[in-house]
Amino acid sequence: MSEEKRQRLIAGAMKEFSEKSLNDASISNIVKNSNISRGSFYQYFEDKKDLYFFLISKFRYNYRQLMFKSFKEKDGDFFEGYKLFGEKYIKYIMESEKFGFFENMYMHMNYQINQEARVDFDKAGYQKLPDGKRILDVVDRSQLKMETEKEVIDILRYILSMLNDTIMEGFWKELSVSSTQELFIKRLSWITYGVKINNKEED
Image (cartoon, rainbow, N blue to C red):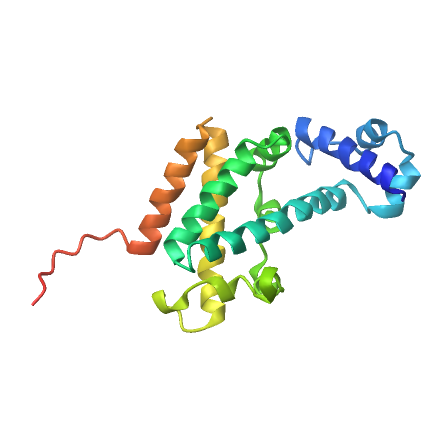
């Protein structure tokens, strides 16, 4: 597919997925929006779900870069690094020129879409990023109780799922960007520092 036709297809798909959920979107509308033949569509994608997840993968790459840079900027501090990433991630999603696409994605998010939308730390955690380092390499693990890389990946993944849940809630409740950011930071603080008050006096 030529670059010009490829860009038309992406633009046509974005238009359809911005107006409709994955289930309600149709290939007929996508090819009509893109001004390409149905045959051309099937040369490159199996179905509308294949195209939808391709679009998500393009954004997921940007999130990996953002997470890496956020932790590095905060010298690997777990709370501050994830806080910065979460604030930027929420702002990017909720103020994006592709707002309609993201709103539909989060308003109709199911398990499969959630899995596709998140950073895959099993791969991305080991993938070389700027400076030849991994995301795991810029997280200060001396602050954490985790003993293995797998455990660090587990907590990074868990918080990312919580972040996506928070964004979903922000869309459902029509929260502002700042309110959604504050909600995420509060929940991140609960996870990082605990929720139980320690009344035990120090000796």
